[in-house]
Each structure stands twice: as structure tokens, then as C-alpha cells.
Image (tube, rainbow, N blue to C red; front, top):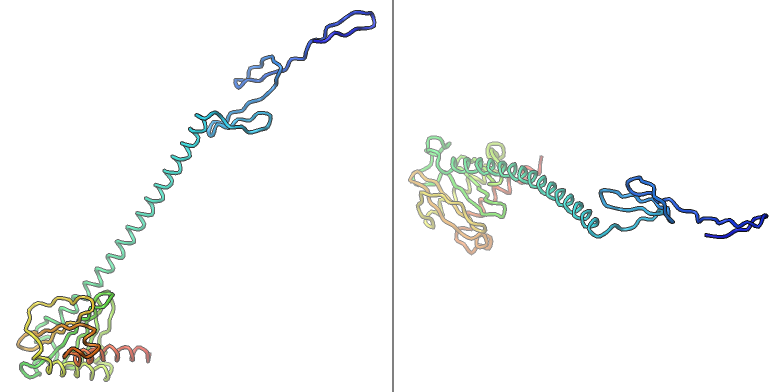
Length: 254
């Protein structure tokens, strides 16, 4: 409050200018300070004279919790979606692997157990002599089976899918390799034992199955021993490998 003298010598009292305070509810109240306060409901940020200030601790905690919950829900959604996609891919891959394995086992069983009447030229072979040879080879990807028949038919089956069929009819080199393999199998008979079961070899092992009109003979050797010729069966292994080599050469010529 201040005193002012006028020309007549009178004194007037000048009152202090009161400010206006705007409350959050919109009501005007008298006071010495004018301010506007806005509250943002999501994060509780307040504005005063254009400056952003932090809200009291409880409001900040509520904001943080909301953000954490939202982030967690989003993360769970992404993980769930990824799991569904991954499961579908695994089912598809499992189905493909199962189909390949089934086809492989079917071809192998035909070569091992089909009746003599269904094997070409089997009856033309001298009694007791081989008319078919199978070499099962345990490789990192599964099993490779090389089948050779006395008429020159030769095939390669892969347990993970694929292989070679019919090359003996189209290529003389493959046909000769197959007949040579059957011939060498006759020399290996004393090193083999009769069998009525046909298990697949372990990785790094090679199992031979020799079919005759009197039954199936078998013998197993380590791949390293065949490669280094420490095993007496190495000649049979080398001959079967020649079939694979001839197939590869014919593919390269195409």
C-alpha cells in the first residue's frame, strides 16, 4: 500500500494490485501470484510458466509401472509370435525329414529283402554266389547306401534325401563298376557271417550286406581301416566307392 499527494493536498491510498490465480478446476481466486497449472494424465507432467517439472513420486511411479507393463506385454507378444512361427518351421522340417527317411528305408529294404524272382538275373547267378551287394556307410549327415547287382544295376541312396538311380542302364562305366563290386563280394564271403537283421551302421562305420540264394551275409569295418587298407574288406569298399565316383563323373559331363 502507498500514499500519494494530489494538487489539493489530499492524500490517497493506492492499493496493491492483486493477482489472479487460476485453479485446476477453472475457478478464479484473488492472490499475489498468477499461474496456470496443467496436468497430463498419462505421465503426470506439470507445466508452470512454460517449464516442465517432475510430478510427485507416486505419479512418476504410476507412469513407470504403466510403461513397464506395456513393454512386458509387447515382449510377450513378440516371443509368442516367434514361438508359433518357429514351431511351424520345425513341423515342416520334421515332415520333410520323415518323408526322406521313409523313402530311403523303403528303397534299402527292397534291395535287401525283395524276393529272388523280383531281382533281375538273380537266378542266373551260380548257387551260393552273390547276386547283390549293399554297403551302408555312416556319414555325418546320416547314412549312404550303395547297392550293386549282378546285372550291372547300381544305385546310391541317402538317408537325408536324394541319391542316384538307373545309372547302370545308361552308362557302361557304372554298369562295369557294379558287376565288379558283386564279383569282389564273392571273394569276401569267408570274412562274413549270416544275418537276418539289417541295422544301420554308426557314424564312421561301414557295414556290408551280401545277398545270395542261401541268405544274407554281413561284415562291418571302420571307415578309417577301409581307407588305410588295414581292413581285409578294403577291396570291397574301394569297389563300392568306384560306383559313387562314376556317378559323379557322369554328372560333371552333363
